[in-house]
Image 1 (cartoon, rainbow, N blue to C red):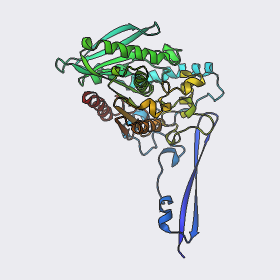
Image 2 (image 1 turned 180 degrees about the vertical axis):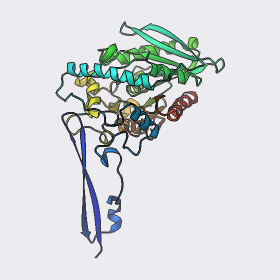
Image 3 (image 1 turned 90 degrees about the vertical axis):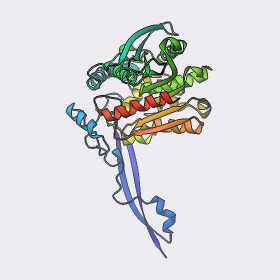
Amino acid sequence: MASTTTTTTTTTTTTAEDGTIKVSTVTTTSTVEGTSSDAVQSQVIPEGLVLPGAFSDPSIDIASDARMDYNIVEVCKAMGMAGRAPPTPLTESSTLDEIMANTNEAEIMYEGLLDAWAPKEPIAGVARRTEVIKGMDGNDVTLYIHTPTEHGAGPFPCVYHSHGGGMAMLAADSKQYSGTRDALAARGLVVVGVEFRNAAGKLGPHPYPAGLNDCMSGLQWVSDNKKALNITKVITCGESGGGNLAIAQHLRAKKEDKLDLVDGTYAMCPYIAGPLAYYGPNKPKYQSMYENDMIFMNVYSMGHFASLYTPTSDGQKDPLAWPSNATTADLEGLKPFVISVNECDPLRDEGVEFYRKLQAARVTATGKIVLGTIHAGDTFAGFNSAALDSTLDAVKAFASGL
């Protein structure tokens, strides 16, 4: 009677108090008498197979990850940040005040990084102006409008941009995000960046739905002023927390019977799962949160930022706050989407899951994985200009093709 040898690899994960996720693997081999080799072939892991990220090396970092784009490695080495992300001093029992103080400190660090990675000079062929409107909550909302000057008379597609920062920090008027708007406008797009209220930092503390309300106020103004702006189609677009807001605006437009406000959404590395996905019993939720933890970002910290945006349990389950909660009914009938994620990003799989939800709801959707990149690594001029150009060209093609 034939015998079959089966190799089984078991992966175990544990979360330490400092938020570090430890991954360990155990491989066992067993021989089964009288079993057809065809029946167990799919369960056999070939000897020497290298699993991605922390599944093969629990101490992996930017410098040692063989998947990583060499440009990113070199830039991070020069800045002394090619090792593992620093552990957070916070725990699951930390108070919101403690999380707020930690986030305010983190904003200063991220501002410095973004300035270092931003374009050094303004991009030619772009006119810039600022518009201040009254938001739906009675507050002022600043819009940064970038218009192409070397692409004829128009009209042009419009990209309505919401910046990254986990809805908790950073600002649209930074060199990094102004540079992103310039680069898109120079490709023949009108780009409007919205300065929304954050859950923490210099533009906080304003939890959900303040930031989304500001974005919706600006989106309505853009729609009302299409002729003056010389624009045709309008897409919402953003990275990380801005990707969340880009999706949430689309969802809210449908909920409020205002789908004519938006013609499509291009979301990059969207931060959409919410605090319940990052820590707690049997969490984190997604494979990429184990595979890529501590590569540029600490997964535990993502849960803390999320808790500032939605400090109540109701908000944590709201699909307009965290679009991963969206049902098929929420998604049906939406305009076209692109969901773009980064290979070496802890947030990768929440974006992939959302793409699959869009597909299940029969929404026209395209999914992209940008290989060799950390979280938002294809949006920084200081990393890999080829990856950045490819992403910005894709945004232009999407907006122009609607």
